[in-house]
Image (tube, rainbow, N blue to C red; front, side, top):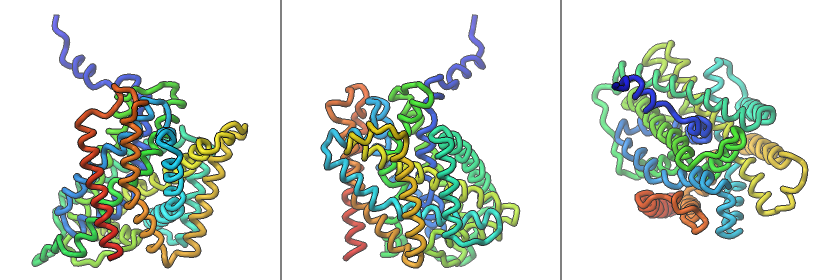
Length: 428
């Protein structure tokens, strides 16, 4: 008696209970990654160079993949975070990560919350002070996390990612149907001049994101395990991560395509300011396709940036909380619950607001500083992640396969060369 084809298909594509219980950290990772690098940088890549930089986006995602993947791989195999792995390398590694985090956290939160607040004005149609708006957004994120903790983060990001995906795909389909918006007689820009190379450097630097969030992902993997009571296998954790990572790469290509179809060849001078550029994207989209498209592209951009703001408000306090517990074990024995986590959340929000208030006009310098720190430390963090997952303490069957190790070494060479090139371009 033959088995119906329909039954076979259901068996093949029905996810196992373990995979369903493991879903979450990878999508939260995607929510953290899809932000300025996508809304601003990917869209600007398409707006300035059409589809010429598709290969750059794909190459950046491919060469950085191993070092993000090592976060959930290590957490699932060892049931501890990458921070614990860093401690096993030596306290120097933990102190280095701590210093990198402190040096960049205020600027990153200030930047992403400001862009999100700017998009909120487009969404609700009411202008307001961006510092005030950023404060309200950060307060909303903090309240969500205080009341709902990790389960609220998990559920909300899943909803946001679905809305983001649907709105972005709708916007892209509309742009494809309309066709290119380039004016007749438009001359293609030169890619390999100083401006083009500088833009490629900026695009690659935070595509898909900074390596800090590989550590965040390892902590989210452990939190998901506590939430469900299910200890994920390496295979289950990687399925969740790959789902988020591939989706992040596709979103980058979607926003690049939006820029190429709607903005490329229009003759508009695009602002270097992330908030202003996002407004230009919305305005050009509306003028090209009609007012009906306004909310589609605004929702896509706003949900992307809000998910980044929410995950940043959680991610930095979470890693600082864990880092301090490892460096100072007596802190973990205090019966004060999550007081260290909430304290760091208050510190980072307060610091970001002070930064916005005092240095709003020189925010570009602060962002350049944070970007430089990320670029310079990227090869170091990549090497630390590699050492952690290939150490003798890592179970043999959970260590990266040979092809991933080879890709790791290629990626580390690329990151080192890229960092040197960035510093030469920036300071020489």
